[in-house]
Length: 307
Image (tube, rainbow, N blue to C red):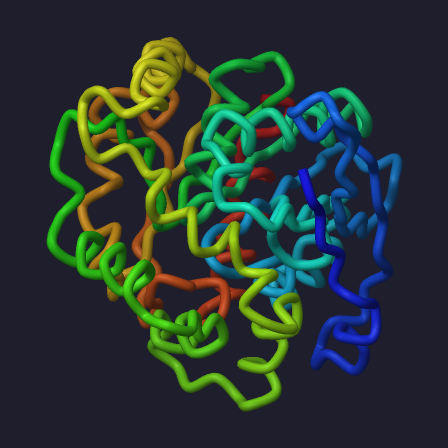
C-alpha cells in the first residue's frame, strides 16, 4: 500500500479552525504497515460526556468547526477524526485500497483500540453515519446515544434514488474532482472562498483524491454488494438498540430526504425522542446550521443524562 500524506503547510491559516492536531497509528489492513489517523480532541479530558463527530464525503473535521465550541462550551469532550483518505489523515493512493469494511476497521482501531473511547454520543452525517452506525452496531456498549443527521445505513435492497445516482455518475466521470465546490454545492448558504479552499486543502492534486473518488462506489446499491451482509447485521443490532437515538435531518437535502424514516420505524431508541428538522440546512447542515445542530445535540444529551 503506497500512502500519501498531505503536507502540514496545506493546513496553515484555515478560517475559524484553531484546533490542535492529534494522531494515532492504525494497521493499514494489508499486512504491510500502518496509517496515521488525525483527530481533534477538544474540551475537558475528564468530561462526563464525550461526543464523537464523524464527517463524510468529501469533507473532513473542518466541517465541524462551528459546532465544536458550542459542544465544549456545554462541558463536553469532543472527538472529531478525519477518515482515512481525508483531512490530515493518511491517504492510500490506490482506489482499491479503500473498502467499506476497511473504513469501519480503521475507525474502530483508532477510536476503540487506540483511544479507548467509551460512553460516546455518536453524531454521524453522510458517510459518518454509514461508518459510525456500523461501529455502534458492532460495539453497542461503547455508546450511550446516537444522532443521525443526513445519513443512512443502506443495504442495497432498495434504490438509492435519482439524486444519489446522479452524484455517483458525476464523481466518476468528472476529470477533476472539485472537492471544495462539491461541498459548497451541498450547502444552502454561500461558502466563503476561504472555506472552499479549506475543503480543498487536504488534496494538493488529484493523486490525493483516491478515497474521495472511491467513496460513492462503496455505498451499497445492490443486494449482493460486499457490504450488504454486514449492514443487514448492523440493522439487526439497531433493532435492539434501546438507548436514545435522535434524528436531526435538514429540510433541503435531496440526497438523504426521507432517510430518517427507517430509523424512526425500526430503532426502538428513537421512541419519544425530540426528533427535529433543521430548517435552512442543505446536505452539509454543519456548514449551514452548525450552531443550531450543536444546540440540538446539547439539549439531547442533557435531556438523557446517564443514558
